[in-house]
Length: 159
Length: 115
Length: 93
Image (cartoon, rainbow over all chains, first blue to last red; front, top):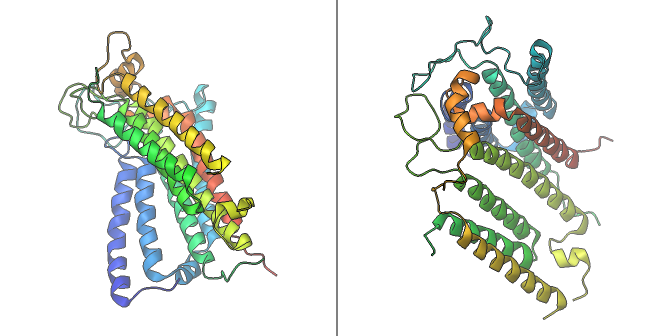
């Protein structure tokens, strides 16, 4: 499909960084406020779909090939499963929260009851949030891009 | 006898409208829209099972204290929504492929009913 | 009307009557009696800050108490994306 007029292109490329920052905030604060990996990934993917609609699918396919998107999605899946297997190696149970009370990175235990949230808490949960968010963004954007590009080459049906 | 269970009536309305679209229509895209409506009705049913009267969201960050609603049905509904999106994407890509091959979108012509 | 339409109407009325009677017999919206109290959810709400460290009980359930379901969901998403890209492939000559 071809792109839209110049006003639409300018305004959507101004609005896209704000949508991306908002989606990244919802992914990163998944263990403190409502949200998490899947919800934030859907927000960023809909911002990317806005760019696809306003610039045309031929231009977007020229900038972003499908190979890069599939590499991004596989990286998200490998980080997710790697964190689960590290729990098996360090503490004996699959999916164990092995960073919870240790001396490594995300290890502050919150006080019981209603507190102000601390970003440095909750063990392996922020790592898994980022991995799932990356996977959802790459997957949904790849689906929309491939379907929009395939309609430019379609001519009647073959019998 | 009938206390007003309005959310359950809404769930039944969604499922019945979706079922009418799946059973009685012949265009393939209308059948897919009916399947999506049935899935939305089932997701609504899952999250109405997890409500307690006068309760707040189950989050501890700056929360006014009180009774909290159940978190497990919300987690199951999250998984169900993502699976619905995945099945919808696959169904639509199959419809595009069928249209390229048969050049019609009528389910009874594709099945081969004699009319 | 043809046989197919007749069977469709019978099936639809059976499902509609069944759903309607089920809605009349559900428990009232938001009220739990004495013999179906949610004990597992009460345990999760009380102990999710000291066992997982997350302030958000729903994220603690999705990624820690029931993380295996999230693994299955990630697999379904991966399979759907692979299937869609496979259908729209262009063979290079």
